[in-house]
Length: 307
Image 1 (cartoon, helix red, strand yellow):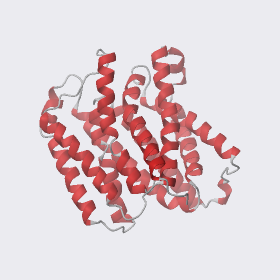
Image 2: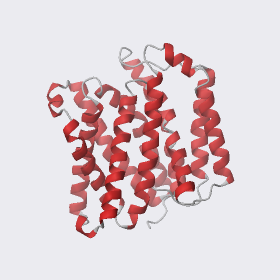
Image 3: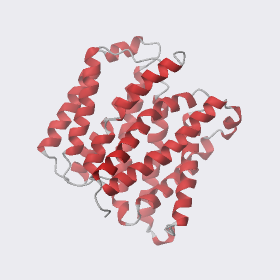
């Protein structure tokens, strides 16, 4: 265990929150020229090659022959869940604005927490129960008039709501599935397996020729998405090493704030490409409560959670 470094850990967690908050905007740009499968395949490929190089340089390359069939099967299952999360999260951006997607995705850590209680018999503290209540109340307020608004919106659709809920669910399943795997692989080794398997699963569904049709703006957006996967993951992993997992999770829960701020800037730069979601005052209050509830749930953890 690395020596605790709270200031350094906070900076790393903040970098992760900012990058994850900005990511949906750049994914939405990529969607103008590429489908979700192709975008995800490139993200897996670039990040996988980077981690491959790191593991080779550190002489920590995993040997699949040392893993049992059941362990490899669990790695494959977790990889499938990760692919579904990545792809459906991008597909959801075809139906919802980025800030809406980020708020709904706060269901993911909540579902992870519930899964830990049900599957791994983890204790649900009173603080977590309070946080979960705040999160759910926030969701109800956020969708107080949003469902009717979505049904009449020209930029968003209720279909996206169900897609992002599915994405949040698959992320929670992926996170729960990888927890027992840390007994056999470290975080980088496991990630290499998942990115490699994820890329191979997506190859038949990937339009590699789309790369040749991209404009400089779309190439830049795709490059940002790939680098975001590497840098945000690296900052997150390092933060988990030097700071408590609950506090890292609490900082990362602020990602929707950075999505909203990024949208404000993006609309000023290119109002033809980006528009704000049609949200009333109660929806904004609900979004704040969702973020607050997610932070409270994170700080209520008694044991470190998986990354």
